[in-house]
View 1 (spheres, rainbow, N blue to C red):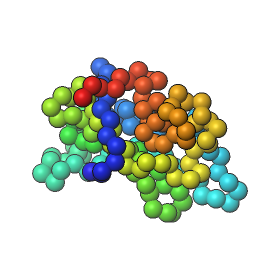
View 2 (view 1 turned 180 degrees about the horizontal axis):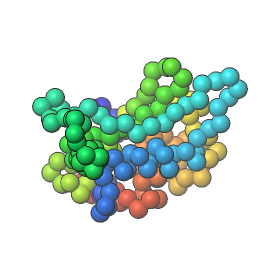
View 3 (view 1 turned 30 degrees about the vertical axis):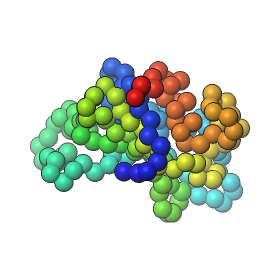
View 4 (view 1 turned 90 degrees about the vertical axis):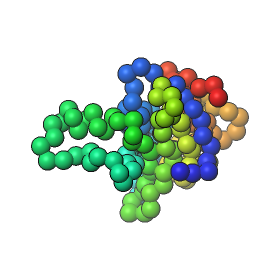
Length: 156
């Protein structure tokens, strides 16, 4: 894992970690993306599954149905991450989503990077989010996106 900030959220009914990560990468973050500078590599933001434990059953195997495979991808054993990469450069994990093993109705958002990579987001667009004072970092942006989409911060 990481020594970054960890926040816990309630997982609404019908949501899985996969669905949260996918919505974050494909729907909620894109409106705040910066336009790439001329001749610069465009940043790509993706939701990615993190490798399950070595002792886990394989996710895919010959003959598995699509619905069974999809069900395995939504498994509570899998963690999901939001990854940003530009060009052929090294990718950066911005946040991880981990289901709370003791309470499957909660998940933890582990923020790996305190700030976003330069040129990933448009600061003027980010200013439209209800965030904490000053330049919003990953904690403020990800928390604001989750709460504005119906997720509640979980009490510790």
